[in-house]
Each structure stands twice: as C-alpha cells, then as structure tokens.
Image (cartoon, rainbow, N blue to C red; front, top):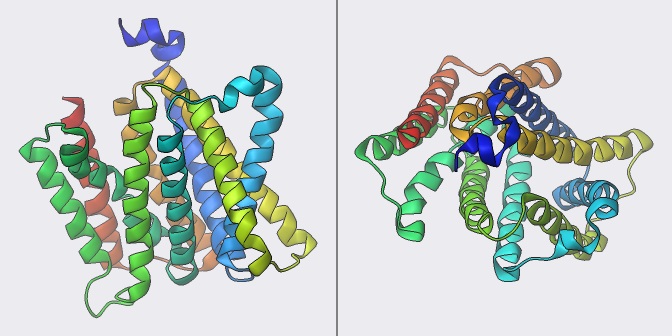
Length: 291
C-alpha cells in the first residue's frame, strides 16, 4: 500500500514542510520560555506546568471527540516507559537551559536522532550502514567541538543536554514500537497524563506561588508544547518523515535567533562549527536511512 493511499494528504509536501517549520518554531519558543522561567522557579515546577497544561488542552480537544478510547492502550508497560523517558528528557534539558545558552543546548540535544541510529542495532535488531555509523561518530565530534576543553561550555552542566539526548533517543525507539499498536493521540495523551500525575506528586516539595505574568508564561509553555506536537503530527500526514527530517534542524536556527534576541547570546565560531557538524551528521544519517 502506498503512502498516499494510507494518508490522503501525503501528496501535499509543501504544506507538510510549512507545518514542520511552525512546529519547530513552537518548540524553540517552548525552550526559551522554559529557560526564562527556570531562572525564577524550581525546574520541577516549570516541567509540571508544561505537562499539566498540555494534558488539560488534550482533554479539551480529544476527549469530547474520542471519549475513553483515547486512553486505551495494548501496551501499558511501554507507555509508562515512554512517559518516564520523556519526563527525564524534560527535566534534564530544562536543567541544562538554566546553565547553558539556548542554541548550544539545543544542538547537543539533537544528538538524539543519531543515538536512535546507534541504539536501533542492539534494541531493534536493525541494520546500520557504515555511512550511518560515520554520521553518528561525526555527531559526537560536533558535540566535542561545542564543549571543547578550555571553552566556556566545558563544564559538568553539558551533561544535562547529553543525558536529555539519551532519554529522547530511547523515547523515540519506544514510540516506534508503540506505533505498531497504539495511535499517536493515545500515546501523547497517556504520556502527558502520566507525567502530570508524577510531577504533581513532587510539586508540594517545590511549590512557589508564581506572579501573574509568570503564570501566563507557564500556560503558554504547555500550549507551545502541545501545539508543536499537533503540528508535527499533521506534517507527517502531508509528507514523508524522510522529506521533513532536514527541516527539523531549523529548531537550532530558531534557538540561536531567540537566544540572540532575548538572552543576548551569540554562539562563537567554535560553537557554530560544532552546530554545523551535528546538523550535517543528522542530515547525512537521515539521507542514508532514506536510501
């Protein structure tokens, strides 16, 4: 069965590209708001706000349409593991943003697609070509260029986005498995719900009453996260993932622009070179996988 038969809108790649561009712009905005709020509130509270708003919005959008079908899963254990991977990714990446510039932290986190390539061999028993292995190695070289010894980013804080990339890599592998049995709506809703419950249990130990402007930003945080995921889901209905993969790296560009405009940080030449190496490595891996 062809992709256009499975997804009627797959013959509209331009629409898919526009949707993925808007999605990554929302993700960059989400990260910028997280970085700002992490300067005033505990990271647990920032992540809690993101998931609670996300879950409430999904309740409002999908439950009236699908009812209890939205929470029915054939693999609850994998759904729980997926949620834990994503909450680990959120906590580690937000912690990293507290110490690191937005563009550099985002670039390090984009090791995740390369880690998926490497981890798919032992976990999914997939075959990986020499070219894909070369792309994985080059991606790690790009990270070393960004955090080069003697540079400003050569601190333990860089372990946060590295850990986030590993969590996100496992998250993507589990998502691939769940796609065989559960719908994306069910997976996203259950992940948001489980993580909202988990973070709510920890919230009393970290609670600080937010200012009104900060409370509005917390609502915007969840809205950006959910909006980005919805747009990305729709993008894949109009174009193949291999076609859209290069445009996801625009998130690093958006992160750099937002970092300059709102945080006054411009990556130095070494960081720019490392970011370029990571982007090219990810694109090369996607191209080899498409072939």
